[in-house]
Length: 284
Ligand SMILES: C[S@@+](CC[C@H](N)C(=O)[O-])C[C@H]1O[C@@H](n2cnc3c(N)ncnc32)[C@H](O)[C@@H]1O
Image 1 (spheres, rainbow, N blue to C red):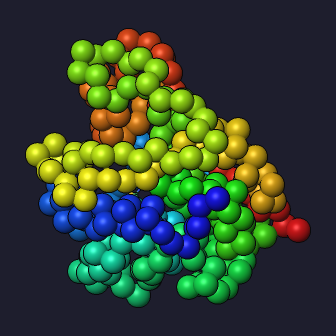
Image 2: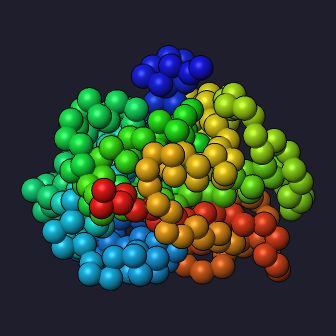
């Protein structure tokens, strides 16, 4: 079993994410102009669903954002009135998030904590203290154990609080993401029995000119049933699971732009590319 608090996987992944931060801050992909102008936006997938899940809005909500990166989405929620805590294991990401929060006048509502997700209970020792746990786009694939992830989420939620989660669909992660002939053949197994895929890749999804020197990463496939069951076992009630045929990055060479910021396979709904869900911690 993987040691969740440290080891080769954590060191390698952290080194890679540390290096990505500067690349992302300078990229068009992570354009911060709307955020800096006070009008940050999420992708249309989250915007539509969150308006439905939280029709009352974000004012006064306490939000925990897991794997917050340099805080762009965290600060969008703060801009809308939430008090936010972002956690990320990359020091450059957390420093950039704090600087961005100060620069746009949100430091009083946004706190950024440097920690491995699996250490979250030690660095934020207040159970049942959040109305929302938020985590999206590029999350559990970096984490070895979804059962423990789900328990951490449940531990932080107040009774009546909710998880909102959106990420790539595990079925799509089976497909070849490098074939330049436009094909989308099955290339990776759906279930690897918890064994990491050790990837060597110098490319970055946000800047095709970037060449990463920290090229090794440890990534995990989490079959959908295991993720949903982990949340249920942790005591959450799943309110919806949506499958989307668009995703906010160029997941395959063959994707086409489908709507602002989103990409899909051309023609038909071949395979879902993203999943989103809301899960409720019962009143108890
Ligand atoms: C793809 S980014 C998430 C981006 C985020 N959705 C956003 O829009 O800003 C993945 C983030 O997960 C963080 N991360 C990966 N493994 C982690 C871990 N074990 N604990 C905490 N953060 C982690 C990385 O540092 C990175 O910032």
